[in-house]
Image (cartoon, rainbow, N blue to C red):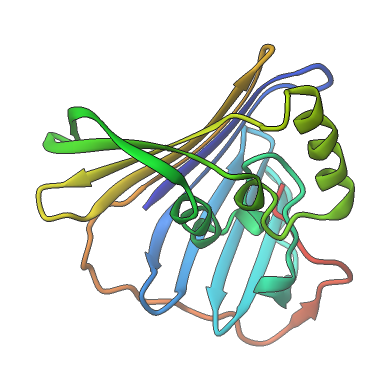
Length: 208
């Protein structure tokens, strides 16, 4: 599994790329990913038993302690970026999309797929979102006439499996795109839950 979130057009920060890859078992709701925030920071994350463990920081700096928090307690703080970079959250958002239509046949990873496109409703966009960010999006929604346009694309293979999802916002030069690509479907996933010194997070953690 790989995931990439790109924010482009931020007046203060410019283009930000956050990428992650590793193994995730969505059926058992367990997995681990390595997240890179551009070239400035790297984080390890483990999801297991309703918890998220996060360790890391600035590139080149010695690894820190593992921090632990309830997975569902991590709030969304950014447009289309999953809290704690949790791919299951992005799938939940995509699953709430409406008005799907067949958008065409393509190739993905050398295999034929069909792409479907839908629209993300506001309750999915603000899923588990902290109040400050949610209030800002409500102001944006009013300014855009009552709806924030977010396209949801899902690529489905010949066996009817979703092999990629993408959520995309593009308004007035500001772009936010979150893409999750599934590879090695059906592969057994081994998750090593951190042992030893684990510190309770003082606030819900978010790598990057």
